[in-house]
Image (tube, rainbow over all chains, first blue to last red; front, top):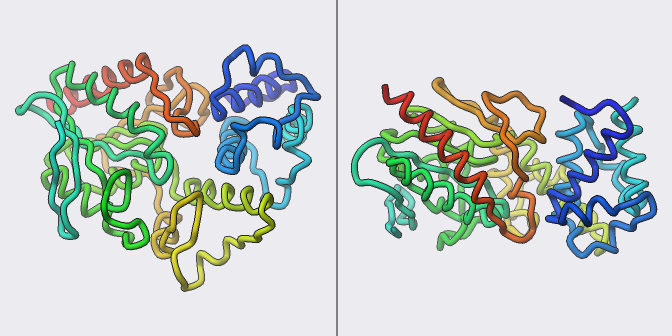
Length: 90
Length: 230
């Protein structure tokens, strides 16, 4: 099932970060809207960015265009969740 | 046990597992960096498969894992030809993980078994995205249109990949003639014969394995091979 509600999207984004970056469940659960991501998590290198985007697309049934990917959407957990929600709940 | 196989382009290493007789599974690892990330997991799965009395082969395809062939010398048909040769010319059950399903699906086999098959387009897109993310840090500006132009191999996610190989991959879907079984992870909403619980290890920068998932998949594959043999 593809998630269709904001809380489910939050859960999916958290699970994608945990799976792609190999974070512990505790660490991923502690993320809040202000938690910095790109540049702050050493695990989030360029390969991991590709993995996060593709996993989000697959799990949320969305398509992310190249020109939508910028530093801003990956800056914090909140920014990424908002981006994913706007895409998935359109 | 470490062995080797010969194909038209040379000789490559191949791991062998399980009994000398009975059905044999040949496994194609995911492509590019994902192969390195999943090799330990694949070995755990094939050891568990041997525990079910089924033999398996894990060939290094040319230009992958520990092959001495340079990836930039690989042509679009090399992987299929090499896997077919490794499989004893189609006498195996062909299994694949992710992009490996594109190759396994291309060889005639007694049956096919796919774990999280990915389209060639998705695989190439991942490589392009990683390159674009790296470019954002270093100020480069890779344009994926370059893939369609003639020229030297393109540096993507640490590999120099021939453009013809990228173009051919992009046009390949993970299909196989029946009987073919597809298994995916719970987190993947795409259709499958079975969804199982586990993390996508091919995404992890640090190679990791998951013994429980390896055992579960080995049991699924063993059951599938036995059903196809009867």
